[in-house]
Image 1 (cartoon, one colour):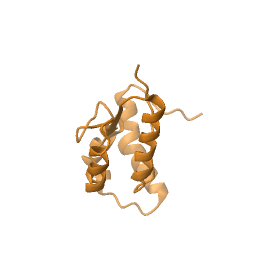
Image 2: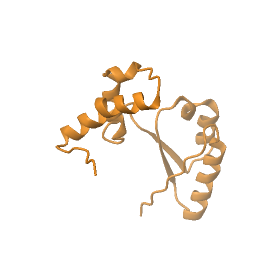
Image 3: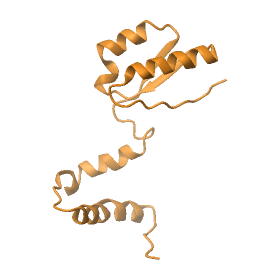
Length: 118
């Protein structure tokens, strides 16, 4: 049986994640598979040592750009190719208008949708 669990520690709190994984392993009495992105901190010397010390822990790293696994990556990928990538807005109003015109309207139009004004 496969069970899914999500634990998102605060940055730099990887000891909490390792302890959490140990608790999951003890409760389920089964191997634990951790799916992680390729953040440099996830491959640090301390993390590698923690993984190697736990035979019950398997880590699978996501590809560097996994658009199909993380849909928001498509928005970020698109954003990098627009003028918004280097926008230095002077106000929140300017920023929100640029995002609406540059991203939201385009994505909605591509999906055949539009924002309502009700």
